[in-house]
Image (cartoon, helix red, strand yellow):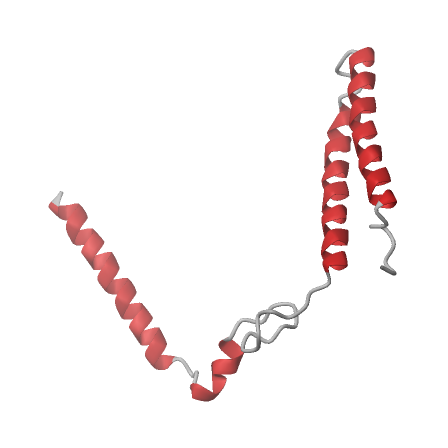
Length: 117
């Protein structure tokens, strides 16, 4: 038990010494603070957080993700064609594609696929 405690204390001490040496030897100055600030999607982190964001762009992204995941689900379905009963495979595939087509029709009906909105 004492050995584990001694090793743990040594690890903590060595890691703290290494971090302290790294901070002391780093070449960052006060002028480099801007380089260390987070930069996300062209938004300035020091400005207002309430910048208007295109909701239509966000919804197009969600639609892309849904259909991207759908492709990942169709590939195993194709490879399982020879491993299962053809009648059950056809019924499951038809149901899955029907759900996707209904979703696509709903998006088309809501004019989500038109970029000019």
